[in-house]
Length: 210
Image (cartoon, rainbow, N blue to C red; front, side):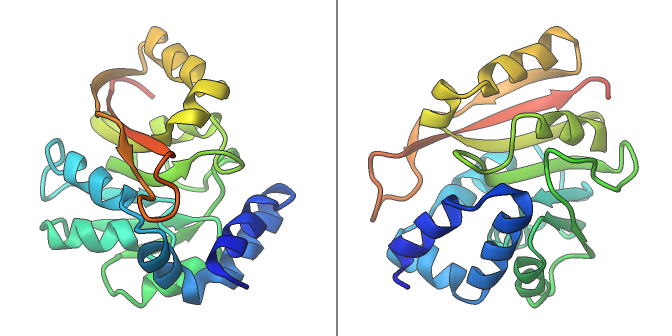
């Protein structure tokens, strides 16, 4: 299956269990396909912006960690207290080989994550919120897992932001006093080689209460 076909096959998954299984099947070839064929840079931009707000000793959860693309970049930037969460066991197996995560957790956004409230100083989620990916309901769990005054840094595909309920959900958490918006990045091409018209932005929030 060609990389372009693989992406469409993943996006055609029926439900979270099927999606996790398809990502697991793709895991071994994922980095080669997404970086060399598509020129994927969402983790790079996400980590670059996150580095402006995070402290080197922060306990950081890499959500939707996949094979560890963002984690590797965080590690290179000097962050050492890294933890990974992903819905796909196969992806986590590849991430574990990087040797950069203290612990790896299997869990699905949109469902209860079996981790304690206020477990992390910061959460980074690169390439997680887009069509047929993590639902907007997952933001509530990310807030719950973050300590007060901790940071949430995540990308959103812009077309999905405009067409889904994500904007309303983000605003509802702001109105409820759960977090404060710190930054929204400029738009950028996340897949410049294959999908130059698909744009992303990075959002940075500071958690106030869980």
